[in-house]
Amino acid sequence: MFGFRDIEILQAIARAGGFRAAAARHGMSQSAMSNRVAALERRLGVSLFDRSGRGVRLSSAGRRLLEESSRLIAGRDRVVRELAGASGLRGSVRIGVAETIVHTLLTPLLARLRDAHPAARFELTVDTSAELARRLVERTLDVAVLLEEAVPPVAMRAPGLSPIVLDWYAARGFSSTRETAGPLSLETLADMSIVTFSKGTAPYRNIERLFAATVSPPLLHGSASLLAVRYLIATGFGIGLLPIRMVDTVHAGGADVEPIQVCPAARPEALGFTIAWLAVDGDETGPIVAEAALACDHSDAR
Image 1 (cartoon, helix red, strand yellow):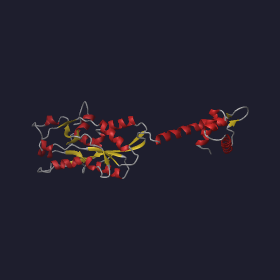
Image 2: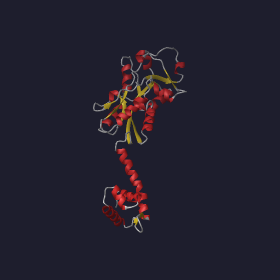
Image 3: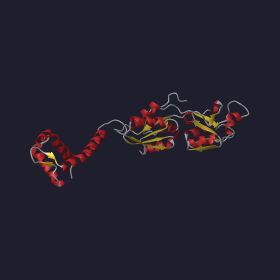
Image 4: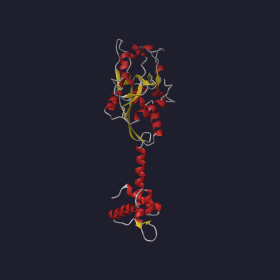
């Protein structure tokens, strides 16, 4: 019915107060501009200008058309600005995170990204690092925060984040119920009910290695939910491993779990996480998220 060029010509005529001045500004002849407006009036079936007297003025229909179409022009210009190289994240940003990251780094990371990129909408996937790696390769994620060992070979990766240190925890008051003080040995721990990350994950394998040499390896109860692990520990179902930063963050001012002393042989390995993404020409999502994650990472994390 009409195009952006038609609206721009109407705006020019209205601002210039006549066809001749508007035609000069747009590099057109006066007759060509008059013919363009006449053709538009025929298509719309209305007169857009009042040509009586000296000069031209918009008719009521012309004013209405410009008022309504100005929103279209503004919207077009906004889209052009965004697509023409305006930096930053826009639209949907699909971020995958391991659950350890949910309880340690996710909130400051998203807050930083939100403040720096208000036009972005974040879609989160929480899963194991192995599953996040698969989704990254399948391009159903834009970027993932996962264990370093799980990063697929085809992906780009940022420098590693501060190690996530794990510790042994029990329900509050556990230490006061023990008959003897001192660090717990692997054999003593093996006699207890142990709750940990889900089977097949790096922390689960870590515990299996710790107890490989014991006479009777413990029965491990795995869960994909760290909140469930913490709850089971807090309610006395068993002892277990949790990220120190998770406990410090969630329970600042009144923990319902407490760390327990263990022998050096029972100390678990820290978890190394990084940010990974697939390189795509012109897409800066991965580097932007990586920069934000590294910036808000706690350098003094234990």
